[in-house]
Image (cartoon, one colour):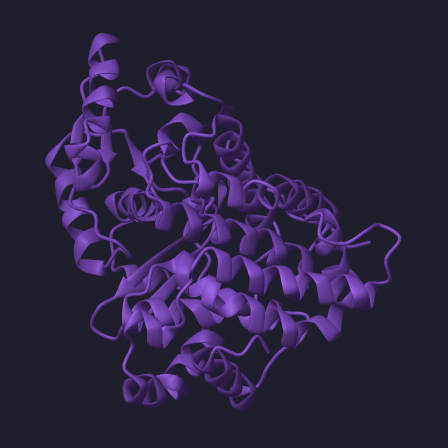
Length: 391
């Protein structure tokens, strides 16, 4: 019998208003000198001030680093490490979407252990902890609040470095769906498809296990019926709550299983063309799922059933056909652009395909896919995605 290695945040607070419990959670962990890692938009919106005021009222002094960037880079992380070292901080609070959370994890690690981020990329696994990280997500997407990974872009090579290990698992996550009400529809759609991709890939991964399976199925049941709802009505509280819970469950699922080919191929698109991560996943999901499904028909059929697009009594082949139809329909209805429509130059895309295939393979994620592509097969998939073919 194989033994699944399961790791979770020590503290999970989930529900409307959970972010307001930050002072209490810090006190319970014996922490009192946080650096808040966030972005400029959350500062300008007043959200960071609310967080700081809550800490101040509890007698906790904090400092703010708000210079994170989308798809955090080595340079932006190094700036955060310099800020951390200017103060006497005993922990890092990540506040924002995936980029601030991933930045917080990297800053907490390098602030204690030093070195360069490239020293920690896969296949290296960093389990020895950095400073404690408390994660407060403001989007229902990445699941980074519950994962043992961070992704940092090396801007000198345009490589999105996957950095795995227990060092990146937050000690606490405050999952507050009320923080997502103000998110624009494009961000809501892209992050929602991102979390759906996490759940599907965790379930079909070669590293799936009974624990991750349970979380992945729960996530799909939460996300699938609510993704369109929340895009139609951003103030639908029940849909927002379901999407936030599903995103965290999906993060737990893939952190304790793995992601697979979609994510492996997605990271280079993000690194070279600066496509937001959830959007590059959405571009790839229908074609990669169609190509992979024959190798794990029952697993993909179970995804269709959990998502409510196939009946329990329906055969696997028919259920998978419905899954592929649903993924294509989601992209169509949520107006997910293809690479060309997003503005990527065709010649540059074609020129970079060999590099993207090599970087995808090097990340290790494609090896977890039910069907593992060689470089030629991956290049064909990139071509299908460019052409807008579902697979």
